[in-house]
Length: 220
Picture (cartoon, rainbow, N blue to C red):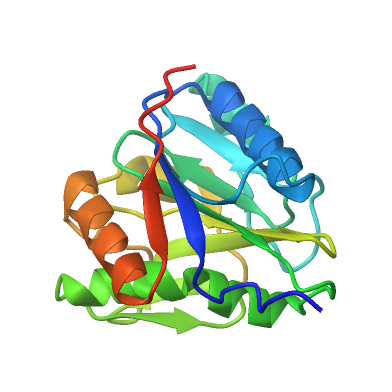
């Protein structure tokens, strides 16, 4: 059996410049396929979308959704991702993060995948004095407010956990457009820069034993 999905090894670090939502989600699918096929090592990716809503493949009880009429009136693009879950609002003040890890040959239960996948983000935030914690089933909270939602996809060979991170997003637009699931706390911005988070994440991975190899920015 291969190693635990989060046992430190070499990881390729992408910090992408493209902001087109369709391009970025297509890139997520391509990286997943390349890691799953062994064409890429494990990957960490940071990326930003221009203003949009990103939804899971299907509307379901217990998932957040969105005001479809208002989104149409505001001409907000709605993009469907491959991972499950509800709808998230994104703009240039929202940082997306993705972890593509080699799996151990068995599928992880979603709660375990979310907690493991968010660990380095939480460590990075805490190193900046933010005070973040994982909140089941798939959130990162700070002071009782949601700052990140998570989604996942897994095969026997590859685990993808990706999520949002509210740095300086338009919360007024978010709250108008998004209908949160029952029990979800209010959202909040963290108020740090994307560069600060990137540096803290690289440092957190290195301290945990990962051999971080910068892959540069991709613009398309």
